[in-house]
Amino acid sequence: MKLFWKAVLLLAGLALFGWYLSSADLRSVGEVLLRLGWLAPLILVPYLIVYVVDCLGWRFCLPAGLKVSFLTLFRIRWSGEAVSNALPSAYVGGESVKVYLLRKYGIAASLGATSAVVSKTAQTVAQMLFILLAAGAFLKLAGEKPGLRAGMMMVLVGGVAVLAGLFWIQRRGLFASVLTLVNALHLKVSWLETRRAKILEVDDTITNFYRNHRSRFCASTGFYFCGWLLDTTEIYLVSHLLGLPILWSQALAVEAFTGVAKMLGMWVPGSLGIQESGIVMLGRLAGLPDTLSVSYALLRRGREIVFTLVGWLLLYGSHDSLRTLRTGAVPAEKQ
Image 1 (cartoon, rainbow, N blue to C red):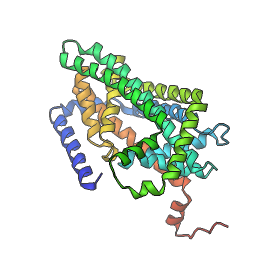
Image 2 (cartoon, helix red, strand yellow):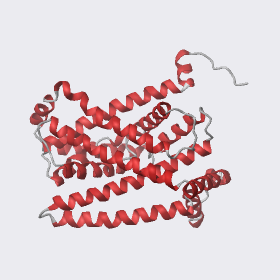
Image 3 (cartoon, one colour):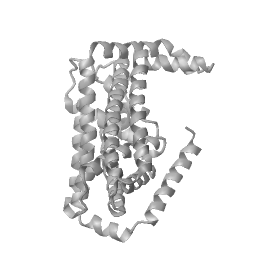
Image 4 (cartoon, helix red, strand yellow):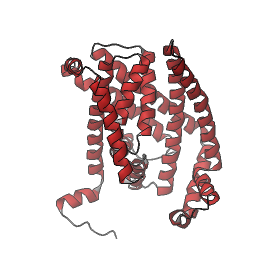
């Protein structure tokens, strides 16, 4: 996406969040945030646990018998997630970083790319199941809101259709499907054509993984689903720490669809403004007070900044060329 449209989306998201802020009681928000005090670091704990669980899910998508420690994989994944959160690359940038860092430990780029695609598929399947569960929670919370009830029914039907379509595409081959679509539209993409053989090779590797390692894919999906459920504990914990406790079903509904809002803003750096607006809007639909929604939106953004900064520091520590550029030394040529 061109820089102009990214800037337009960013400004639109910030304007929307500003509009929500204008209708909120910012004085109350400030007073509520001050209640945290020394308990503020506790907000980082749920997402740290999610990172560990998600890394376990990713581990099942890597080659069996991999002789790389979990701590190393954890650092690699954290670095990739930091890139995805900071750069508007539709998560492609972060996955590329993971593939690059895995190569340093003897994992071929084709296997790294396979793990990225399979992992993202497992994570997406888990997220869709999570959204379907949250749609059920929203139906329970809808009450006398027929529009919300109808919308959640559409989400349920659409979610099942998306899952079916995702499995169908993966069975045909993700990249093969893209090449077929490009050919059907009579598009000439030189980058794809020059790499056709390599792309189809990765497709075959992915297909073989699904065929020969179904239990590993299911285990990965299970861990990712646990990760999504654990995500819910963040807003649930925040609400109790702020003295504005909510129901688990409300936390589930807001968290699941906040992920959807973040995906809609994936071309905006960090989904800035889009995510915050989504949290406030979803909070209203789920019956949360604006004071809590705005407070959580700000705290969540703060948590993401902390995790992103740590991830970039881990990436800096893993990337020899970055350290070399900083010191001004010239790297020795490989023999």
